[in-house]
Length: 128
Image (cartoon, rainbow, N blue to C red; front, side):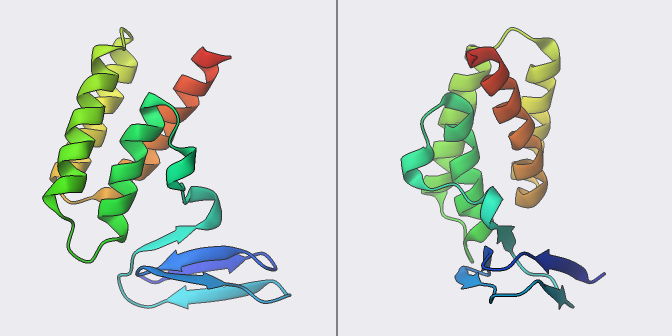
């Protein structure tokens, strides 16, 4: 099933590891086959990895964007997810963590990123 991306003027995105930027007008791209795509708002820079949930998100993003995810990113994910889960008492959030972990183990990194964003939202609410 094709993926349709509607891009704002100047919006950046990553497509199979290549950073791309839209021109000065809105544009629509239709990807006809499977590709790793992240929009600018979903890309996390290493300097932004400042909280436990973001430390979980970052290695998942690295695995998603990599042609061949390495054990280092996976090991980092396992370490950070374990730390995060040990600090959480909410059963709903812990279940979300289990779902993220299952997605990662199944190689469904994009699904894991979507779920992990909910962990970041939860964390942001708690830190306010």
